[in-house]
Length: 420
Image 1 (cartoon, rainbow, N blue to C red):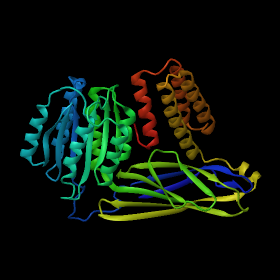
Image 2: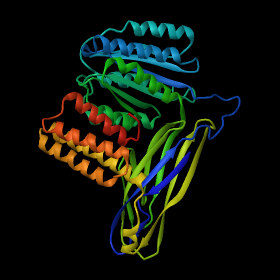
Image 3: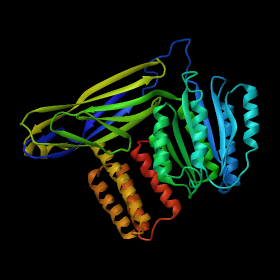
Image 4: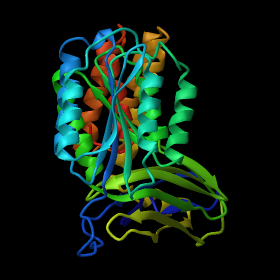
């Protein structure tokens, strides 16, 4: 694992409280630790595919979900195991968790092909049944344990309380079973599906068209099988006089005077960014304040828990004049701009849902101005300015269901430091 820590400015005024930004870039370096020659090249997968078969999935959606599930089963090996669960108002274990021998694969594929659409949406029951299939065997091997939920609708049977579903996701994650959610079309609850994935240590996807279902599921399977580091956590130790707020939506805990951020699993060559807003109180001129960062993770290839630290980010108290002369780091300010754009989209969507379209448009226009000033030399940020202005214009009349989903997914990917 590699850490790069950068501040927007290294100098802070000694006579007044100031605000600075710290950007951490964490990279799971490919082949940083070689596996033993006789060891596996990847960890085996313990998977549950949980497929919504409610009436709204009838037709192309269900057929593409089945096609994607069959692809997964065909491309796993005898080291892996999988279960398939489908649900409408009732839950069916299409195939209990099995080691994927050639015979088991053929039987499971045939069972998936027989899935037919039905009635309402017992999302909670279907998901928890699939997660239990994973949990039943998670200790039999050093598995990567993942439940993947595909749904195009609202939870309207069984457990329907979003807070309860989020709590179950967090509990499963603490037991070693992660959850990925895939929302299809325009009728699912994007807030719920995103929060289940964040709490569950997995990924959230918005699938606009049924034809995209196989591509998204292939991507998720590829990422899971490329896991290089597990249970990745970042601890930021803060000197006296400094407080910090994480601007991403990673799960975060206070640890003493610092913050502990949970990134969960990372794939080989993946880079994720964490951005902190720092509040720095006045102090003695010339005093330096190192910001120590420690990453702890389980290395898949070595099978060991490891850590790496950095203290390269250092703040120094200086005069007002020296602080004003310091130029901001453009790469950090680009990240500040992108996180502000994501935050504004989240706020605008809340106003839109409440019917306050004027306020929604105002928030997006204000974010466009902020982004333009924060990162004037960044092509990425300036493209975001154009997008925000366009969104502000559309917001005046209210967003369509499809536009709401797309905006939500955009801001979620930014806040989770993931590609769309």
